[in-house]
Image 1 (cartoon, rainbow, N blue to C red):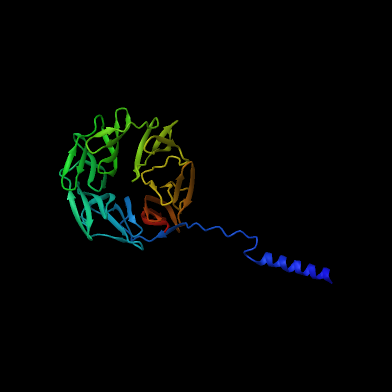
Image 2: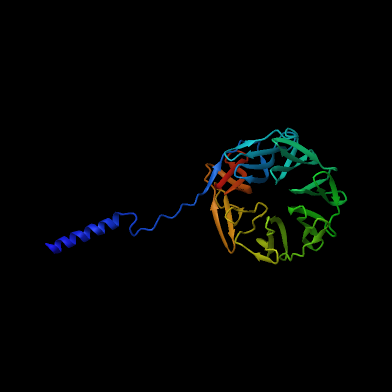
Amino acid sequence: MNGLRTVIICLVITCAAVLSPAAGVAPAAAVTPGWSALPVPAAAPPVTVSDLAARGPGEAWATGYEDAADGPRPMLYRWDGKAWSRDTTFPGAGEPGRLGKVRFVGEEPWIFHDRAGGGEILRRSAGEWSAVPLPRTLRAYQDFTAVPGAAWVVGEDETGPKVWHYDGSDWTALPAPDGVRYLMGITARTATDAWAWGNTDSGTVILRWDGTAWRDAKVSLPANSNVHTILVEPSGRATIGGSQYVDGSGRTYLMTWNGHTWRTAHPPLGDTYTEAMVRGPDGALWLPVRSDRAFQSKYARVNGARTTFSYGPERTNAIDVKPRALARAGSALLSFGTVEIYGSKPNLMSERLGG
């Protein structure tokens, strides 16, 4: 009888261990949230997305232009933390033109506006837009950036490359760096620390502004390469993204500056255009890549030597989903771009990861 009682007690204990979720069972792994679709009011297709910038989880601006009978029309969208809406209150909203780069200067969004060939900076303060025109019209406007205390516009006219500098009250024409035939882009960390890249007779050169003059940054770029973008962070860390041509084809490279040395890497990104690259809330580099699925977007996450990929939400009848710009919005990543649904022209789409 004692033996039978022992057997029964053992069976009860065993069953309790199997049925109890806390006994011998590892906790369920946390579910990582995926990309979700955010509705965007439609524009007049086809549309072109220029840029996206966020000040935090509750404010972001996306720029570009849409098609119209008399030419391109500027296109501006605002994210308020809950939904996208179109803004048509800025000067020249109903006129031909294009909106380009957007940067936050403190709490103010600053946006470059190519308004019927004339350049100006749109600024939004206390809920109202104002325009700061450039002192002279250029033949082409290539790039724009702004930080507290300074803004720059690079482009060209019939005499060659031009750099316009704004100190908060006046524009000044800066001498173009020696030997530079064409300035392709510019970015800045502070009013006395700006980076630019341009073409010379010997290839691409990286330039740095110290508050007084442009100087060659002495960056040894990979052979047979070009530069798409430079991502400069408040800490001083900088990342160059571009393509290197090897045996007739291109491959993406990233060069990271830690304040002392440059480190070059070739993540498995194919020949990805890196202009939309951002530093995510997780500390990794994120950028959109060409998707192998017609109905989904695709993103790369580069964290040191490790590269991983994720897909956006499935879109019914989509034949091409193209994220064009990324921005960190608090603990989330925002994406803005275009989606082409079978039988229609590309229109706007947005996606969010986290948050």
